[in-house]
Structure formats: structure tokens, C-alpha cells
Length: 193
Image 1 (cartoon, rainbow, N blue to C red):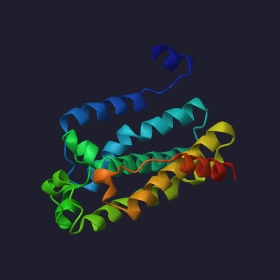
Image 2 (cartoon, rainbow, N blue to C red; image 1 turned 30 degrees about the vertical axis):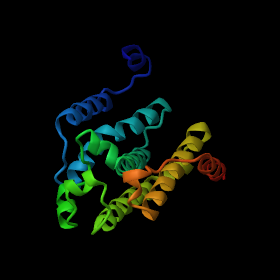
Image 3 (cartoon, rainbow, N blue to C red; image 1 turned 135 degrees about the horizontal axis):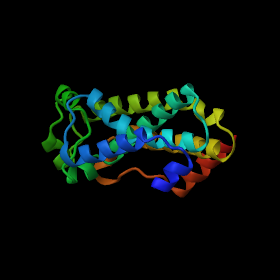
Image 4 (cartoon, rainbow, N blue to C red; image 1 turned 30 degrees about the horizontal axis):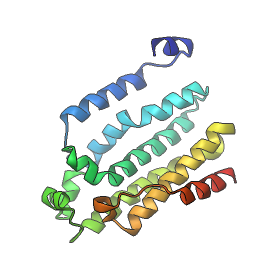
């Protein structure tokens, strides 16, 4: 990695952020608020997009902001997709204050119980992830060539998972939403347009 960093003059800050997030994942198992979740996304997801843009020679501040929005959205989407998986590892990325406001308990997650205000809680998280994805989506058109196509397909993938989660917020407990072969074909076709 040191050679690649040197050869491509890659800034160290994104790597430090990633290491900070990895260390936090070992120690921090709950997030008091959405602000805490977003701080984690800033260090766990956003550096990946920033590193990619750097390697493609794109340092436009607007593009970095778009990338941050997309990466945070994808991280939030993954948190929703993996609620049961993360709980089995002792982690909950849903904001604790919002769980309390929706009267959703850890016991409910443990039981895979989607009753009460579960749907409302999940829909709130989906709305945020969608808003971030839409805020960053212009980057898919701003970038040309392969990276632009890959980004447009990635955005479509995130949107597809969010649609599946929205249609069935209980799916995280027994039928984790994934992208099917058909989804990939549609995403690629739309990404090419």
C-alpha cells in the first residue's frame, strides 16, 4: 500500500479515517443518534469514494460532496439490509434515540419482530438514505467513461435495495434483500442510458 500511496500521491487522511472507523467498530456497538451514525459513515464509507476520485484525478469539491452523499447512503442502506446480521455480531446501527421514539427495543430486533412502529422506523431510515443518494446522483452523470458507468450502476443498486426494504421492512429478519440477476440487468441497462 505504501508504494501505491507514493506512486499516486494519495492523501493519508482517508486511510486514517478508515482505520478510525475500523477501530470504532471493535469498541462501539450502539449509536445514540443519527449524527453519530453519520460520523461513522464519514469515516467508514466516504473515504472510499474520495480515494477513487483521487485515483481518477478528480479533485472537484462538488464531486467530493456528491461522492460523500452516495457513500453515506450506501453505508446506511447496508446497515438496514444487515440489521439482523449486525445484531448477531452485537451491533445496532439504528439510532438509539429514534428506536426509543418508535418504541422499538433490542429485544424486538432479537426476536425478528416487525410489529408496532418497526415499519415507521425503517421507512424513516430509508427516506434519509434515498435523500442522500439523490443528492449525490449527479456525480454519475458528471463522471465519464467506466467510472461514470460503474457509479450509475452502483447508485441504481442502492436504490433497488432501498425499494425492496421499503416494500417489506420485515425482510431484514428472514429474507435479507439482495440484488437478483434481473436487477443487475436492469441496473446495467439504465446505467448505460
